[in-house]
Length: 112
Image (cartoon, rainbow, N blue to C red; front, side, top):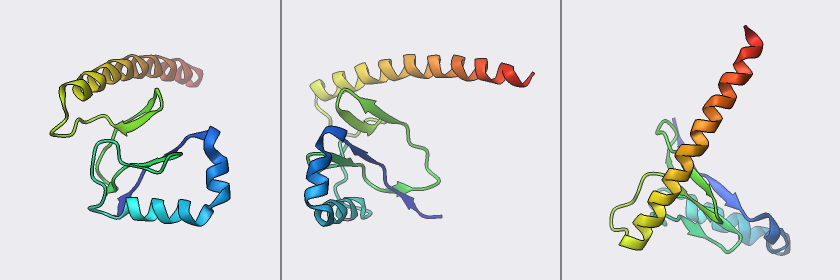
């Protein structure tokens, strides 16, 4: 029983982390504190997105593509443009999940 925090790092900006690793760790710690930075896109430091902490037993489906990283469940108060983008991402996720399911079934065939 505890909390989890997901972090995404843009690999082409590692130099920013190397230049100030303490700031990087401090920003992740600050963003991951329960009750802080609760918005759909999490806390963005430039090279890093930190999603709000959530209970470790709660399911979360994440979208990570198109330089975006966020929870698949929409947040209240999103505007029309954000909702349309969100829906487009969910459609892309559904296709990816379908492909992943088929690939997993194929891998399971090895055990028959």
